[in-house]
Length: 428
Image 1: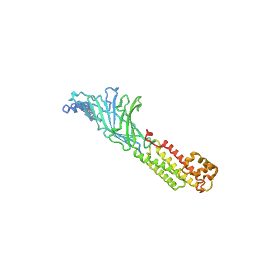
Image 2: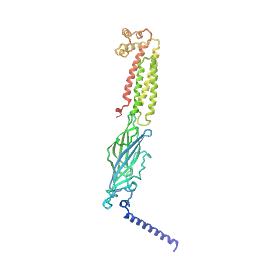
Image 3: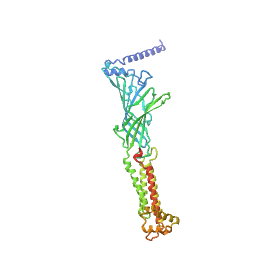
Image 4: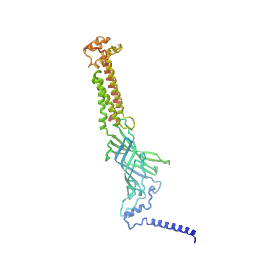
C-alpha cells in the first residue's frame, strides 16, 4: 500500500479519535458522583453553559436588571474638571439557565460563581472619561445564584466623568455632575433595567471630599435611540450628584475683605482733600485692592462656566480706588489755585450751598459766619472764602465736589453689591 493511500486512512482515524474524546468528555461532564454535592450542582449548571449568550429560553423574553449604586467616596479635580465616584454597584437579574431543585442537591438553595463563568449584563457608564474608570475586581467578583435562577452581582468600581461647574456665585457655587448608565450592546427589547433608588442621601458616604459636600443624589430615566440603529430604543439611568463647595474659609479670606476695601475708599473721599492722611489712605487703598485682586485670581477656579461675580466686584472696586487717587490729586491742585473760579462755577456752588440739601451735605465744613455771608449775597465770589480771611477761592468748590463724589461712590457700591456680591441665598 502506497504512502498516498495511507494519508486518508490516518486522517479518518484522527477524526474518529477526536469525536470519541469529545463524546466521552460530554458524557463525563456531569459524571461527578464521587465529588461533593456543591460541585455536582455547579457542574450540572455550567456544563454546557455559554456565558456569551443572554440567559433566556425564548429569545423574545426580556431580561430585567435591577441596578443599584451605593456611593462610598467622591472626588472632584477642579483643574481637569473630572468627577470621580468610588462606589459599589449591585445588579440583580433572572438567569433562566441557572435554576435547580434543591431536593436533588442536599437542599442547596444558593451557590457562588465567578462573574466570568456566567452571563453578566454589559451595563456601563456612557459618559465616562475614557481610560479613567476602573474595576479591578471585574473578572474576579463573585455572583450569588439562588435556586430560582436569581443572580445577584456586587462589585466595587470607580467611575470618572467630565463635569464643568458654574462658578458665577463662587465660592457659594453648587455642582451637578451626572453619570449615565446603560447597556452597551443590547437594545431595550433585550434588556430592561431600572433602579430602586429615586434619591440617595449624601450622608451614606463613608468618606467625603475635602472641598465639596455631597448634598443629595437623585435618579432620572430616559429612552434614547439604540446606538446600532436597529430601529429600537434603550434606557439610560442618570445619577445626578449635587455637591456644594466648602465656602466657610474662602468666605472669610476673600469675601469679608471687600467690606474693608469699601470702607477705605469711602474714608478717602470723606477726608479733607488737602490733608496728608487722605493721600496716604488713597494710595494704601489702591495697593490693598491690587493685592486682594491678585490673591483672588489665584484662588478662583480657572475653569468653569462664567466668570465669578466676586472677581468682577474686585475689578470694579479697583477702578473706584483708582478714581479716588485721581480725584484727590485733582482737588489738591484746585485748592492750591489763587485765581478765582469762573462765574458759572461760583454761582452753581453758591446755589448748592444755600440749599437745605447743601447745608446738610456740608454741615461739617461750613461755619455760621460763612453761611450768613452766602445767604446775604449769592453772586459775590468772596462768599466762598473761609472765615479766617485766608484767600482760598476754590475751597468750597473742592469740598462740594468731594461730597458729591462720596455720594456717587456710595451709590456705585450699592449697585455693585446688588449685582455682583455673592451670597449663599442668591446661589440657591
